[in-house]
Structure formats: structure tokens, C-alpha cells
Length: 211
Image (tube, rainbow, N blue to C red):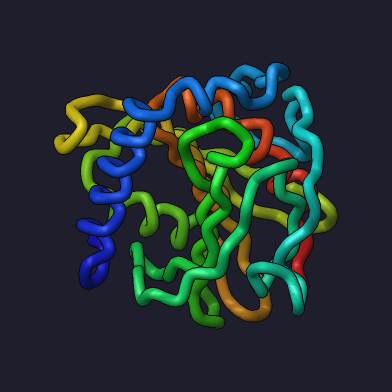
């Protein structure tokens, strides 16, 4: 389960995002005209990036001096805005470290980066614990990937929100570094928003490196 006020905070954020859509959908619709469709489900092991239409890079985060200093570096999509998170929000074995907001690019959602403490944690076990801590998850599909010499585990699943009364897709991937595990999660207001943001998620996964 989310520690402290984490679960309530995230659900309140969903409500705020929904209100934003109802009052500002015309602005959100003026985003990138080349939004791509979702990639295939991660039902088997992979050894490289998927054949998803690539997002344009808007810079790299993770290194010292960047918007979020992390145990990994990766590219964020053009116009997405990264911001470090200092509030003590945890999900399973990891804590929220960075939020990358898609609204400046015309979508409603975030890439969220969660980091854990160093140790001998198994990457899949970390990701499974992260997913298990989110109430309402079903139909998890796990797979593995390797990029830039870094091996990791990814998952796609359905999340049912009692607050919003709907079921939507979510995705996450995890790697283990010398400084601890890192989970990168993509949510979204709904499945349509999630699928439109997948190229940014794939960009992060494809360019991931340990620091």
C-alpha cells in the first residue's frame, strides 16, 4: 500500500486532472499532431526498443545539475516538464523522486520516477511489489528488456479507479543500480491519454543509462 498520504494524494491528483480536462480540453487538444499509438503488450522478453514511433527528445534528466538527480539518466520528450519531488510518498519498496508532466505537450498525465535504497533487491521483485501496492490492478503482463547495457523488467496492466469509475492502462519499468532500484511509471487520465504518451515512455526506456 502507499505509505502515509501517498494514495490519497495520487487519487486527488487524478480528480484535479479530470477537472483540468473539463475546463481546458481545447488547450490540451492543441498538442503534438503526431501522437503515436500504443506498443504491443510486454508478453515476452525483448532485447531492444520496440518499433513505436519515436518521440522527439527535449533533453536529458538524472545527472547532477538536471531537474531531477537520479541513479539513472534518460531523455524526456519535447515540451514535457520535469520536477524533483521531495514529499515522502512511497509505493512498495520505492519512493517518488521525480515527476515529468505531459501537460505542456498537450496530454494529461505524468512519467513518475520512483527510487529505492541500495541493496540486493531483485528487479522483478521490486516491480511486482510496486504494482501490488497499487489497489485495483489486474491483468499484469511482465517482460524483460535490455538497452544501453542495462537490463530491466517492464509491466503493463489495467488499473480500476473507484474514484473515477473507470479502468485504464498503465505501464512501468524497473532497473537495479548500484544506488538502488528505480521504477519509471506512466499513468494517464485514461487509456487514450496513456497510449498517446507511450512514445515518451519508450523514449525514456530506450535512452536509459545508469549514472
